[in-house]
Length: 184
Image 1 (cartoon, rainbow, N blue to C red):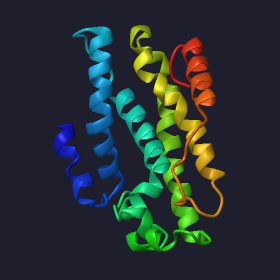
Image 2: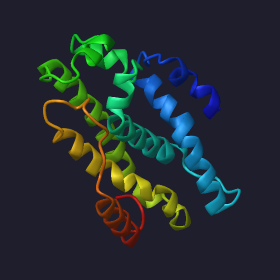
Image 3: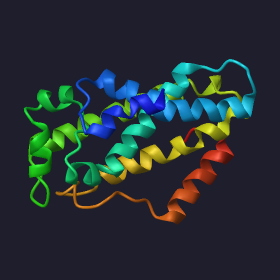
Image 4: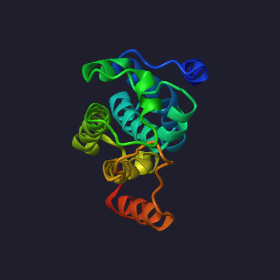
């Protein structure tokens, strides 16, 4: 399922809708998380909505983290639905590299971050449904909010280089999330 989902990424096709992007992340990142949870919990049933919310939040954070890589290579990664809402085309993202970011592109990126935050909020609201034994599979989600904040502070050129959290900050965030029992 994950391999088939990567067909979109292989050809650089942009997802048409937000639902397409969410499905892509659910099939790829969510599939990996389901395997992790299966190892942690055994053959028991787990909540697919929780995994979906975590996968989409993680996927969007990763998309923003590697946005320069995708845009510089001509891959469409932001759904056409979001771009058209702000009157931006896929080609305009590549054309805005190295210059001042237009208000429309700034609004597109704000919408993408808002989508990630909505999934993160849904996951946090349902945190009590995460079995304690499965919490380690959700630890990585604690890095989403720091990456989203870093993306906001990026400045005028979000396409200049990959977003990276300092290693000490990653470790500190993961440690704090583990002490609290999972999702950051």
